[in-house]
Image 1 (tube, helix red, strand yellow):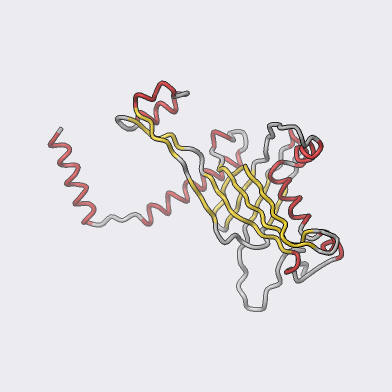
Image 2: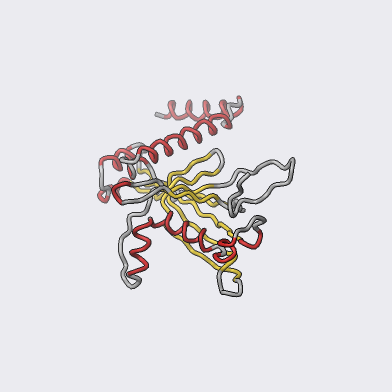
Length: 237
């Protein structure tokens, strides 16, 4: 059996743990190939957040599109401008804890993982261009990426990548690194030309909806309160 350079060896009878994966999708127009990074260790914490801003009717002059206006019209007096979901997590790579080594991995430490992660974040060609022009601030077109966490798949772009090299060998090659990632979930209107991204978002939305329905309560106590409130509203109207 062939074992990857950073794939742990499991004891007999120990259940295999699903590992998180980052997959950058190929783009022939930009000369990008698919890249896959499987986490050496799953993150201890994953933070997901959604920011929204309440807007009153008086603020509608700043609304940019009919779609935004329809969202505001959904509630009397105002509505929410909801931003795309943000995800942040920390990855750890440690070459000293790998049980199976080859000569190349001894020489490179965790540099191959860090290089691959940078390509997934910025793209192969553009990552090289950034290295050549360090003093230039440019707008990159980042690869569209799938963040696979077990049964959940998030279509994302990586918006921040911060690497902390922790330990080094005698040649100053890092053998341990911690990487903080921040990502933005791509919605269908932001990647309409990429059907993989569109399907991933729709599958994620359906999965969440199904789980919410399964957990939602339909108790008689809640129903009585709702009926009372709705009945009072109709009488008062």
